[in-house]
Length: 114
Length: 111
Image (cartoon, each protein chain N blue to C red):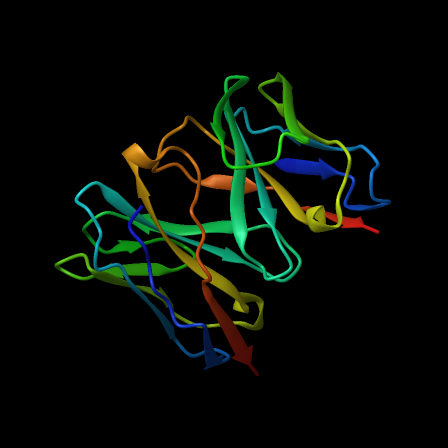
């Protein structure tokens, strides 16, 4: 059983399009995250949700909108895609929003904007 | 957030121990030291964490200096599967819930 799953694994699209990436976790965690890993391999937090409420929103363009329909899902919708959005996006989850609790990551979604 | 410094890369022979260092000279009393690793084309995975005492688990050991300004992740017998980027991360209860990844150390394991 996959703990944190993301769909799709690969996403190739044109500039200006709108796309969504879905994330689901079956670990019973109440906190979920989106991270972005750019071409230089730097991993940065984008958003964090705890019990369906946004608790972290880093300096991310408002073209990115996370949606959490329930505690097990955190989807990422991106409007008006730009070349610079090309990256690998990782979803993660953790049990309780504690600094000592390990985060479980999904396999990533490689987004390529042409 | 307190920052960490790690070597960009290290190399090890298979089945030998590997010591991955991390400096965190500005660590505060409430910072936990976490290690994650990222295997090629995969998401990061938790390795180990500690506060003051040395820690062991099935994956690795974490040795923390007495002044807590540095730590070392120890892989007792490196395998080819351990080739990954290893991240040393400080987590403070006041810094929120996210992991603040640095550049990490890219570990190459040769047969």
